[in-house]
Length: 150
Image 1 (cartoon, rainbow, N blue to C red):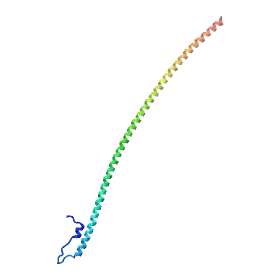
Image 2 (image 1 turned 135 degrees about the horizontal axis):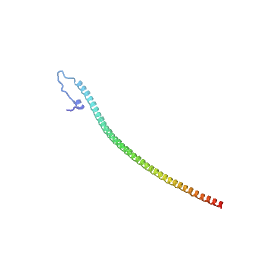
Image 3 (image 1 turned 30 degrees about the horizontal axis):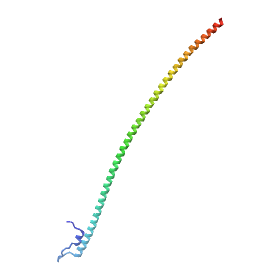
Image 4 (image 1 turned 60 degrees about the vertical axis):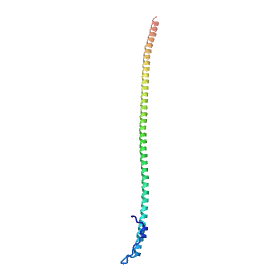
């Protein structure tokens, strides 16, 4: 059975003729108890409101924490994807650079081969020219010698 402050205030006691309680003292005590009970009920109600408010705040904070965790996980996934993409792009750039470098080296080696061939051809032509020139000089020398003897 619940007792309210009003129940306490309105409580009536039977008065006995012998050695009974002083009604004024009983009423004063009942008023004090009713006031205390009223204060406790008010405090209890405030506590319930505060607890309810704190429960809502805790739920809000838990939701915000969940959202933050999801955002953090999402950001970590994006960062990992960006790192992987950057790694792939770097590998692609390195591969392209290596391929381009190999082409440059191959072109340089081909050009070197061409230049060596041309040098060899020029040397051969020089030797051939020297041989022809010596032959021509010897021919002129013989002609000069035969003209002087005649």
